[in-house]
Amino acid sequence: MKTFMLRKEDVTHKWYVIDAEGQVLGKVAEKAATVLKGKHKPTYTPYVACGDNVIIINADKVKLTGNKLNDKIYYNHSGYPGGLRERNAKTMLEKYPVEMVERAVKGMLPKNRLGRQIFKQLFVYAGSEHKHEAQKPERLEVK
Image (cartoon, rainbow, N blue to C red; front, side, top):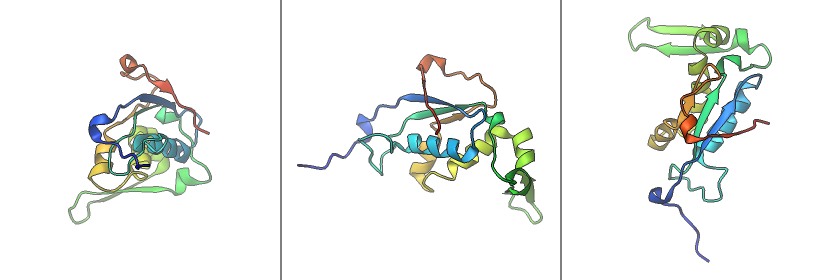
């Protein structure tokens, strides 16, 4: 019996929506990364973007466990001397909830061209409304 390897021409992408309200950030990101990579499918092939599109709504209502709201620091650097910017998780959740969730998911994807290609299939929204109703996304539960 031959091993089945999926070609990028044969991939079909479904749409899923994850409601992050009251969910832990890490669990939401883990579920999204698994679906984006396609590891939930029997046709998973490591070198093909065979995953599905994921919409995450209510990113501003995500939870963090422990004391991460005050202790977790997000860093950015402009590339110039003295260009380091630090923000704690509380500030990120209040002002930039979409970026916070995107960073959590992106950290769980491969660090290469394929990972950047897969990341483009992620859509994060702070509120409960999204503009992808025409794709008829299925609800995905986070455990």
